[in-house]
Amino acid sequence: MNKYFEEMDATIIGKRLRELRGEKSVAETAKALDLSPSAWSMYENGERIPRDNIKLRIAEYFHRPIHLIFFTDGTHRS
Image (cartoon, rainbow, N blue to C red; front, side, top):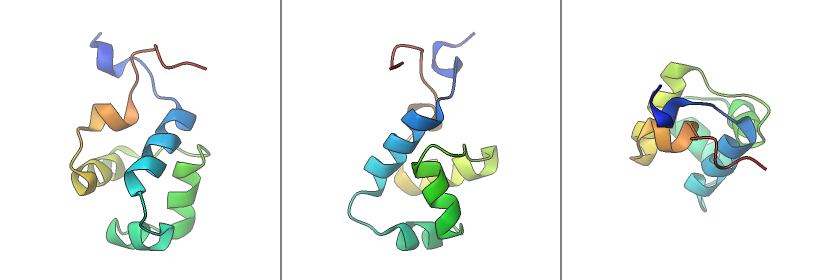
């Protein structure tokens, strides 16, 4: 198995999404991604992991590879 695609951790993903959002508001980011603010908040809070098509939109919006946002190699566990 490719080392980048070993696991997804909602908490780590949420932290990454919060960092990527930076100074933009939740509402502004959600609107740009055609999401509800509550859905974006759930992703940031680690309550949900986006579906694959939404992962792609997020990666394109932030100009980051999908694997760097959504996957870990197992070394980032708390």
